[in-house]
Image (tube, rainbow, N blue to C red; front, side):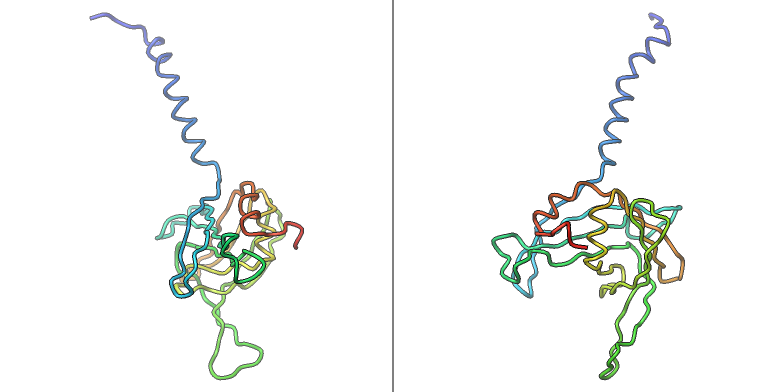
Length: 192
């Protein structure tokens, strides 16, 4: 058996290690993922753009990573309005703490389920405070258009919320180029 010097073995393994590291880095590059969805009740199809985020400070949600989802109509099907944008949602991955807000003019027992959130763009130290409407499953919230436009113009976005046990957790999104979303959804980037 021939003995091979250890430095030759290490030298031979270096390209494999570099290739593996390069593959891992490219999978961490943020990107909008596009899928066609159907609204069975209203009988139309729409495009959903999804951006995966991450939890900060070791928070472990039961349903995977948080995601920012933007829905819009294809140009040919945009009969609902002159704009193709339908809405944006944040999927937190675990049930959120719901606060019930009484409407200004109450007719019966109607309360709006909302989630208290704080958010900042580009590592801004000032966190905006807001209350976003909860989805029926209590793991998603509707993102207001004003906040969405700030997110699309940012390099990164941090969002704080509380889960149903009252534990505060942070989500972060590294924002990719918004062109595919703003073009498909007819979003005017000058809108604030």
